[in-house]
Image (tube, rainbow over all chains, first blue to last red):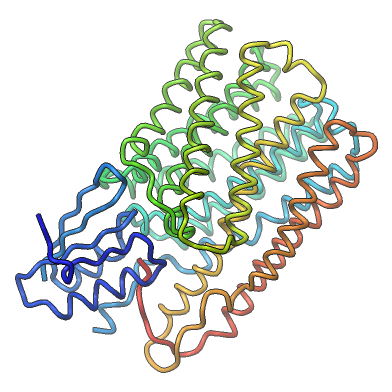
Length: 74
Length: 431
């Protein structure tokens, strides 16, 4: 799926906890049902727990270059 | 919202920390043993002192830290929550340490009773950990190469421990078994099947995260653990059937796979976006270079077995794999993990008020660099001592003691500063 740049957090070269902070900040700007894309070189299990607690859905996919693409629904 | 942000699934800080703080003591003991024994320790891998020193490093230092780190990282990198991690740590830690000390004493004193007692304690500690980890991972799908690697690494630990137990029983009860090839197989599973696979599984996460490199490709991530396990299974078959040629092919394959992983990691590190090299990167570069050297030795010995009969071959291989390789990796990662753990738990404790200190406030670059210089000197001396043992074995032991004492001191610094920083803070989960 194609995402506009303003709906993508490319956290592949960010140090913890920046990926989490940037993701939560973007989620705060979305309406219920809208989606965003998080890109990381690891599977963010701690983030998954927080998303679950907050009632968000997500699905992740491992791309050939080692990037985990996580689509999060607000 | 603040409560929802709290990453409260993390095990209590004491659970991993007790392992991390104990491990350097075994490095100190190994250095002390080399100081006492001198050149005799490096004369053969089969002397009681050499067996004792090897297990001080592999069980007391390496396994100790790997188990402690796994208690912390299983929920973070695999989403696998250990049931009662504090209780597990309180059970495994003393059993492992008592077992390791009895094993070392049993080797040094050639006392079958001590060896058997050590076997029971190590069986309980490693078995207990494996049982808890298997329960946590059982229902976790292998959605990433890291999770697949963790599962296979733990299988490698199981085989290593089982082979070690058989060796202990054979030694202490006089069983008639081919001890030398069985010891090689035990070491192969321990170094490649357990430590090597675990290192790679963790590297997929920590190399890009801490050094800001590109990621490992998905294909290499999925393939690597199987490329280790398959030759190990062949090697095991070779032992069973007494096929020396198949054992040599297996070792050759393992060496090639290991070198490929090291070269791939070096290539990723050369593309890092962190401009200034830090202590962890230097430790990793030493580890990768040393491991490549050791694997080249293994490669050539698989083709010309007579090489491995040279007196300096075994101690040099051991120093390159254990000290320059795995212990260097662990040392470098500890300097990321320990301040990160302190930071993580500090933010979990707080609710409101002040702000979190930066991670370098727990341990400065200068403090780490000072210890790193001593470690690098110890590695250089140990390598040289394999060639000139009479002159250099004791100085090498002394400097290795100092390097490990320095590591222990730095880890205690993190703990002391964590306690000092324990003030109300904002909470932000680390991802």
